[in-house]
Every structure is written in C-alpha cells, then in structure tokens.
Length: 64
Image 1 (tube, rainbow, N blue to C red):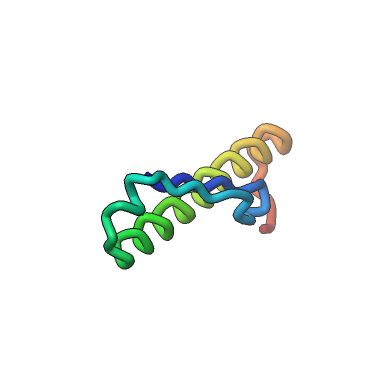
Image 2: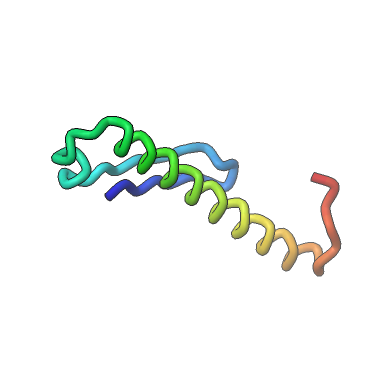
C-alpha cells in the first residue's frame, strides 16, 4: 500500500501511497506503513550498494 524509493545514498527519492491506504482512516497504521516502506527501501539500497562495491573491490572490505 506504500512504496518508497531511495537512492544509493539512502536518500528518499519518492513515496507512493495507494488510495486504499488512505481509505483506512487510521493515521497510526499509515505512519507505520510509511516507516516500514522507507526502512525496507533503505535496507535494499544498502544491500545493493554493498554487493556492487564487493564486486568492484574483489570482496575486500571497505572501511565504511
């Protein structure tokens, strides 16, 4: 019901809320859905970044 898109720096780029989520009328539910969507997008972005850096560095860990 809520979709978040973040970039490689884990900065929020877009947030889409479906009309279904708005019909619920429960603000705390909507807030939880938004926080969950953003958190999942950030984790996915970080995982992709680590995977890409791992390929570039041959698996050698970076100091950050």
